[in-house]
Length: 521
Image (cartoon, rainbow, N blue to C red; front, top):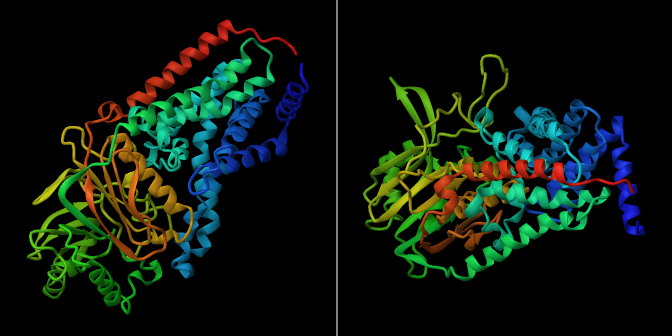
């Protein structure tokens, strides 16, 4: 045994021997460290520290209950550090909601951490020695990451695969496997060096096997990018408007006129540039104002002849003058002031736009208004004059992998309007933008993203940012719409692909468990 091997063995033994509160504390901090690999920090090496440590902690558990506790605390740390910014939304109306901050952050982290706890509990059933346990960990992590995206309406925020958002060659892997496939390979690569704590033949090859897979993905992705020059759709120049209106000022009666005027002024032609269409962010105004004669008079100044204003708007259904339903909508207004189509957000944010189990939970929703928002009928492909068909996505509808474009009615691009002003200058908007970029790569569709305070931008079908407006800035960008590419492998088969890959990992784990011989050092 070399000196370095002895050092690795000692470190592994120290983690394996941890018990009680020390075990739980280290689990929590390793999870929190892993969150530093997510945007905007993108400190990728911490993944190796965190997941190698997780393997060794699970090595030391004697029961599945203990494994669950390790996984739960690891997940709690991961989500507490990665989602701290959620509490910023409660400070917009601090008098009403600030008291909820500790309960929200703790409850959200512990709740989402349950998925990681159950992952560790399930993985412990097949916790074989050597590389087998690493394969099991990666496969089981991926399966429970997928479950987190669908159970209880789903909250697939910060999947591990998002850590590659700024490394375009590896990011291309999402076109073949989706973000969960990237998570599978990333967890495997990060955890694989844990095998160096055990003595078996080819352990060094096993430790580097995941990194070799990532390198292969990077090479294939690089070739894909090299053979994919930027192209656009002729005549589809769009202006995206980022007004940068603070959330505290957004719906103040004394500020409404100024806010609307700011968006109008940003939409006026500049330097002779006359875009075909103008796009405003989520909840940029109210639907009733858009339909009001005074509002339409103002809008006709900025909507190009034959073009459209596509904007987020609050919409209320009324019966006998009484509000019966509210919708977070996207509206397309033509140059005559007519509403050409309306799309209602269907994937609502729990506690933000509605309160689940309202009859038993004594809390209010965070957004303004006396009634909960009602969901729309579902995903749609919108077709409008002088505009290629697109799939509208409001706010966090863009984070749901495999659920942003209709398979049988494929759009030519994705439109994500959002208002991340709730979260200020935190990590939240960066993470949101990263998820939206992943959807472009997965589907092979360009993405137009319009955010109130950022990050707005144009992203091509390979996830490359063509133009953007940074967080906390006011501005506009005029860009010709990037062209789509043929449906990707993932666009055709969806999340069946990472599920099959996870199954292959389980088979390989079983195979190696029967054929690798662990020796005492």
